[in-house]
Length: 468
Image 1 (tube, rainbow, N blue to C red):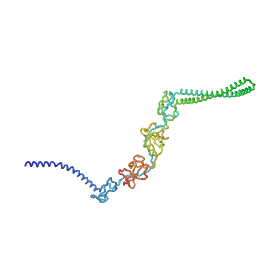
Image 2: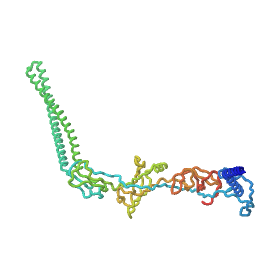
Image 3: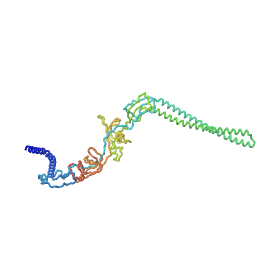
């Protein structure tokens, strides 16, 4: 008996120890299924209240009607008896509209520029020597006038060279005069020789005739022959002397031309020993003192023209391309220039004068130069190298529309609002400016444009305009 009781007890304890693990296993499987069923039931309950929500991703404009078991509250506030319409059911988005007005537009760019001068001269004396004069005006920042004597070197060697060249030229000219006199004398002697030769030749002929008749002796004929020969030799000598004198005169003529150039160089060297201001302007830098020995490579000073002030500024490739796109010339475009320093402010009008021939290597920018108009403030008040504010005005463009940036889709599309529906339109943006996009073409006067950005905007979509 004790053994049977012991065996039953052992069997119950074994089965009782196996029961708790099975319950946990059932709970692990059943609980997720229960939660899923509760979620489905809740969703169906919500759908019964809304009458079936419209699928946000469906392209159909009308919802599929479905019966609802839940009647819901009824009353005039719902527009009818029965359940209310779901939120967003057939609801038109409230949007803002922008009315198009076409106007003329003149683009402008706010830039920075630098005051430069078109004439900058580095002063070098072409000749060497010791400086004996340096003008008090040759000081940094000083004003100069055209024709002012700014510096001079010792002119003694150059004046001596000039005098020597002049003396040599005078000597050559005196020789020419002497040779011309000799030629004149020889030509006179030639005429005499010609007059003497003819009688001698006639006498020789007569004696030869008389010799044939036996009237004269052979000796008389020989004497006549010698005389005629001497006269002919004298004539040939005169002709030779004339030719030689003319050749000498020609040589002296060439020597005279050479010496005249020597004289001109001597005069130029003497003039180059003095430096005269070539224009009105300012002295930028100086490296010259009295007693200093200078050569042609010595830089004495740098001068800048006061009447040829310019503003140098740069445009990016995009800005330059926008200017070129108008098809008009860039030279002549107006600019407004402002220089500020402390409490001083100077304003100038100007125009673009030229475009540099090459692009700046470091930045790829294009350099332009603008000239300042006469009148108003004096250009001489602008320090060379100072920076200025500059506004460049482009060519005026007609029939330009302004729309908010929020109206643009994909850089070149927007939506018109026609009869409460969205109509897509491709446009040609000109530029973005202060939160607006300027449209060059693609829009007409009076058209309405969707002003606020709708993420789900699509052609034909119904909208309700609430503001303009």
